[in-house]
Length: 80
Image (cartoon, rainbow, N blue to C red; front, side, top):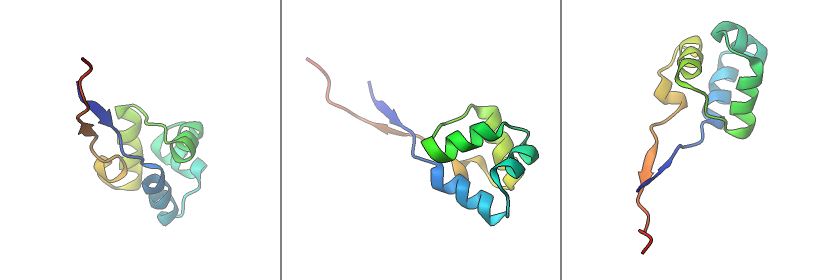
């Protein structure tokens, strides 16, 4: 069974937020999500559910994939 790796999005979200001149709270209001979630994404690489990802991307005017790249499958050795 392959292992699925989700690339970190920490820097992408923070850079986009700052390029729009938004504080965490400002993005939270614009996207209608909790500022705690945005903090968790930026600080601890938390991966939110699809609705939150869509709201954040829409609030920043970008495609979701610009913040959260597609996961990558990594093959691993089978256990015998």
